Length: 162
Image (cartoon, rainbow, N blue to C red):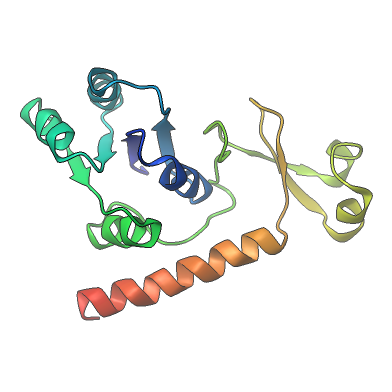
């Protein structure tokens, strides 16, 4: 089973990346510290934060909390080094980066009129969010994401001495 995460207000960008990689990432910039701890507890999720005091409070309540650095690359490498995530995209598990819902794979016919015609002509596979209605396809953005994660994998190997 894939790990679930609850993220504090300073980690919105990380939440999107975790979702793209297929992890359940509960995030809102409006959750209070108490709400974050409660959500992590109920979901048996790992609390991710940049706030050391919040991490300490969560741990005192029996919740695993990880304090992360400021930069996205450092955050992802730390989580991978700790064994919490794999630095890869699995399109069968990807979640909506906007709302965290599991995406549904659909064919071209389901997205006609919802994406530009040029996109329709170039791609056969699409992913549709059943919650917010966003449509995704394996374009240049996905290739950039994969390349970034490959660079981070190399950094992780270098960091862990492998």
